[in-house]
Length: 417
Image 1 (tube, rainbow, N blue to C red):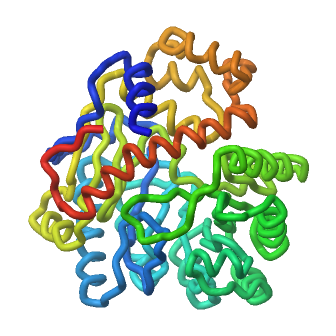
Image 2 (image 1 turned 180 degrees about the vertical axis):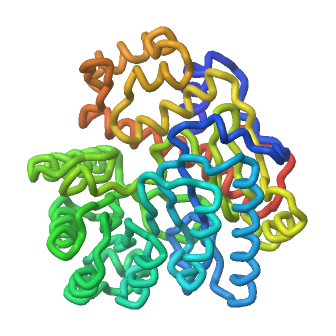
């Protein structure tokens, strides 16, 4: 696994040098120069802990929650005040954890954001199905939320049991969603679960679109080493057949594909915090990607609050990019949308994409991974699967290792990937 990712990294970066993350950071972040800048806020609290979830989260305790939200707002001001005036950004996304547990202070957090940033594409928030009640949705709407993403995972009892989730009452869900409208109502599902079939996923997708969703996300199950999940992974060939079948079904229905595994009834219904050239992350475990660096905040809520209360950024690790390393990051996350525009690449880096990766692009076209039209490279079904397949290697070789360490150490000295 690490051999594949290491060889790919060395080939694409033209260097034997690993990705080196050090316990350092810039107090002044150079985000003013970034275009297409996104914002992300992490709320790590949950009422109960799902055993398959790898993200930074803890059980909700009121006293810890209040201190954390105070520190979060202070971090937003610490960073935002570095830019004179208001910085133009794309979307603001709230993830977790269970961000709706912060519904009572959401307007306060968004107000702090709006003091420093202009949002051009709305505000999105992740919801547990238990959060989808009229009172919560009205609070979100009043606070300025325009997009919601509901973590259904599966409507089917057999998979809810496997994932340790409660049954979702579809009729109640539909009724509640009809009472409060949002620009995007997305429902998340997990694919590649044991014994899962195309008919299982088709039923979930159909149920979503028939009961209030205008967007669906079908994420692959990934077996992180540090979770307590006992779910086994699906073999490669079965997974590819399943992803291809679901993709063909959605495309035949006329749904718009906005990323590797997201589909919507129309192009206006979007939900993705990942496809941004650059982004700022606030809260414990949140990441920030800028032109020449990537940083990740500490996973420790206690240490996060201490750092911010002292007037310092809560950064645990930072990588300083070489030009080729930054290009790899750019291409990897841009490709998540299934397309890479050569003009956008040249606008960002000042050099033609073909000059830097012409050979790789020709090989990808020859293998049937990509097709090119008007300087835009688009993934085929085969290319989309192998992107997913490589991302699985990347996640387990890099993200799994980093998150595993950060869950144990608030500020590790160095990590090499």
